[in-house]
Image (cartoon, rainbow, N blue to C red; front, side, top):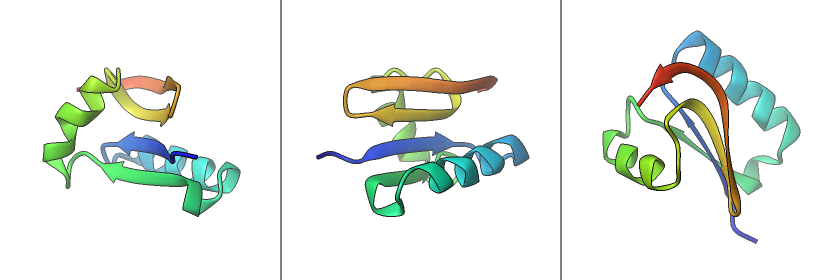
Length: 71
């Protein structure tokens, strides 16, 4: 099974959402990507359908958790 990917920008809302996600999904099943630190991952996130962060990408779906920070 492929891992989920959680993209965020490091803001307080994103960090809170990250903690919530990690409480729901086992850590070994989700990759956390901080787009502020990993700027090369922005294109990857956009290709997966992410338009704002925080966002969770499952192998077959993408969920924008908030529209606070557009890519």
